[in-house]
Every structure is written in C-alpha cells, then in structure tokens.
Length: 382
Image 1: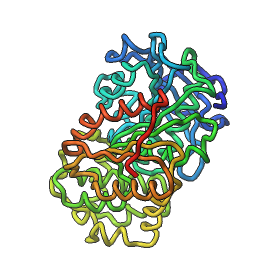
Image 2: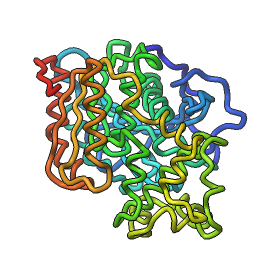
Image 3: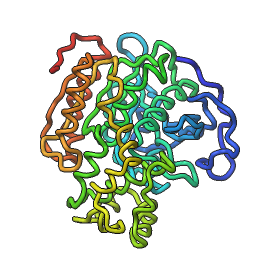
C-alpha cells in the first residue's frame, strides 16, 4: 500500500468536521487531520482515532471525508501480520449529527455490534463516514462510485495513523450490510482499478442494494421505506448535480419535506412516512415516471452494480429471507452476474427481515472472514 502523507495537523481549531477551504492538495487517502476519540464500547480492546482524509467524489473531484480508525490494543497472535476490516456502515441519516464517527463517541452508533465482534477476533477496523458529513455538505448516500472511493481511501489513510502497523502486506477485507453492503461491494468491484496497491483478500456484503432503481421503486408506498427512498433520491441528486433533477419534480410541500429529511437521522426518518409514495411529494409524477426520464435513468444505470466489474477476490453475500426493504431478487441477480464473470462467491439466505438480517448474518460473515484470513479451502455456490 502506498503510504499517505503525514497529517497536516493533529487537531483543528473550532469544528473538526469543517474541511479546510480551500482544501489543501492531497492524493486520495492522504490525511488532513486526526484527533483521539473516546468510544466507550471499545475502550478495552482498541484505541479509537477520528480522522479527516482526502478522497474523490463520483465526478473524481477532491473531497474531505471523515471516519474512525480502531487500532487493537492487544498483540496479534495469529498468522502473519494483523488483518484489517474496512467496515462500510448501513444507513445513518442525512443530518450532520448522524456521522458514524460522531455516533461512535456518543454511544448511539448502530454498527457498534459488528465493530466489537471484529475487534474481539483481533482484527483492526476502519469505518468511513462516507461523503457528505463534513460541515455544510450533504451525504450522497447510495452513489456507488463515491462510496467505493471513500471506503478504499479510508484504508489508505489508516496506514498513516500512528500505531496501526498497516503496511503493503496488510491483508484487508471489505464488509458491510444494507447501504454498507452496497458500499463494500462497490469497493470490492473498483479496488483493482482505483486502489490496486491495497491487499484486498475478500469482501463480505449483506442486504446489498445492487440495483438502486429497483430498490427505490419497491419502497414506494411501503410501511417504513419512503424515507429511505427520499434518502436515495437526495443522495443521487447531490452526487450528480444537473443530471438528477429531483428538485424540479417536487411540489412545494415536497421540497419542505426534503429539507426536513436532510436534518434527520434514520430512526426518525423511518417513522415519518408510513405508507407514503413519491407522488405524495412530487407535482404528480409517480416514482416510475420520474425514474423513466432519460437523465435520471442514466444515473441509475451507472449505479447498477451488476454492470460493473466483478471483484477479483472471493465474496460472501448474504440476504435476509424476509427482507422487506431491499428486495432479495435484485441481490440474487448481482450474485448471478458476478458468478458468471468468474468471482468465487457464496450466496447465503439468513433468517429474519431487513433489520434483523445483519445480526443473524454476522456469525456466518465473521466465520467467512476468519477462513479467508487463515487461507482455508474455499467452496462456492456459483
């Protein structure tokens, strides 16, 4: 791995999350600043560091991104050097207060369970906040290229955090569920072209929203999914300015709703739109009519994982049998597409709905990681 430059500063005056303006020049993965973080749930197993680093958005423009590095405090007793897991988190919400690095410190982060489990195995863990959680910005949510860049650059940046011991020989895994399953899959897909120096050995992705258009349309009128649909539309408009004209499709009330959603975390959003549809926020268009616009459809096409390069590493993909938020059919289609392109894969159906699927799938996911890090024989379901 190419080492990033030393951080410009170890702390920042005022708001840590306020990116420098103008942004200093830096290659993807170069640290901008760091500060120690107190994460009570992992205090006995790891030293936490909040970082800001350079990455690239969907247009390949330089952006500042934040995240958390969890450096284990106990010696690594396994084979070779310590493996690291690049954990891509699930939906947080679009409000600035929802950044995972902030929620880790506030003890409200929903992804603490997998972080603790990974650390318990002796592996290092990094978690990107993704694009859009620096002050004054808006998350791009499910924009796949941006997700991939920010996740992969998080691994690059961690190499420059003192004490991690990360080197070019460090074995990495990408891992995530729901939005995080999409982000980790995108990272695994683009790693050979975007971060070829990264020693990625496997990807573990659950509840993958591989076809964002399919997922957005399936959420229309659902019990709790309309807020997530709005997240996706807002995120894509942010990632592809001028190409995804959400604002012009919204009614006056719809624009007010979008403004409110941009300030919320996911628990509040999920409870806010029971049985609502896109047409309740638009000037009369259905989600299918909006998505059929050529400019909108082209953005969705660019964010369909099945059409992207298949990962060159083994992939463990799992999905909840009763997933009511991310349809299992489009996830199976991704598995079939990547199997056909030669990726060694296992597709596992686990008990539960979307929310419980992460927990029921975690044992199998961690077992897969342990096997790959130990280089045990691989059997696929392709």
